[in-house]
Length: 189
Image 1 (spheres, rainbow, N blue to C red):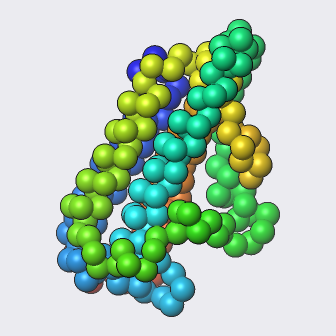
Image 2: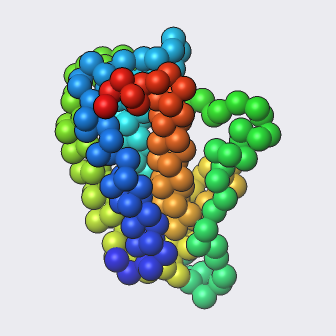
């Protein structure tokens, strides 16, 4: 990986998954897709949403490569390598969580169609594709490839990779809180 910051953010992503995924591997398929509350996603739906998010980031990243010539010209200008947690900021400002756009909301047909091993495989596979896509982009160039995301204040490629890790951690916390509140953690273990 040519960008040390992107590499660091991918490492964070992997470490988070190493801590979280083994806990849900103990769940049966029924437990994985069980909705604790109406209108709230199951653990499986959260994980599928994370897969859809990485898939969308990969597509948008490919499209953003049209900015490579501009980014290469700006390579000597300063850029950020970190971003704030937009999910916490939104919660504090609005008093509620963000709603997922339809393109990254898990479709109803996915429920009960996959087990945890399949979900983990598609999530890891798409993440590895994203890693491969950005592996040869120098940090000084990645810092100037911007994404149209007003909510995140137009992050650069480095920040977007960190946002993927922040986003996953956000969902892991939601799942953990829901399991603790419902006593699900004890029921599933």
